[in-house]
Image (cartoon, rainbow, N blue to C red; front, side):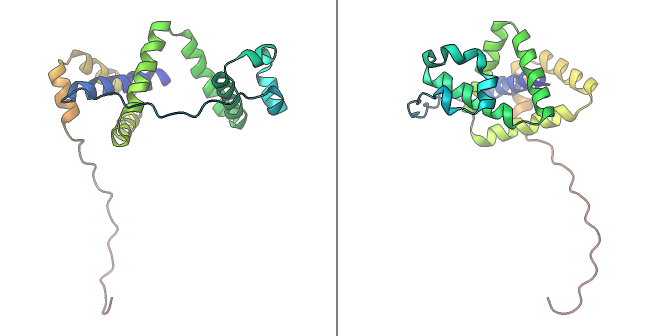
Length: 179
């Protein structure tokens, strides 16, 4: 599923960038506060257990890496068993990818993060609609996309989404006098 999401985000980002009138300057990176080293003893015993392979070299890790590992271990500990299983599957898929594909996906993620919030929301909504399609429809949509010219793809992206039918409202009883 993560591969499908990333492929779809890549397709949308490719189309979005093809639609852009002028190349946008990359958003300046926010000035990050300098990372403060995290001491081994400041972590919980559960975090230390998860990160035990780093114990001997912890003090030599850059502070950013220490913070990332400590934050990741805390997130892992806060996950349900189902979430952990899903995360483990995604990690296994990620590790199985060739390095070039991982790099391409990192770049696409950065492109996505650089989009304005409303465009990010459109991408998420489009992906959710895509994910809810039956597998054969998704396969057909991918095939059609690959066969389109860049101009055709731009036309699809620029087209506003089809309006969704409004949910029927139950009949209202007639009003009687007053408000």
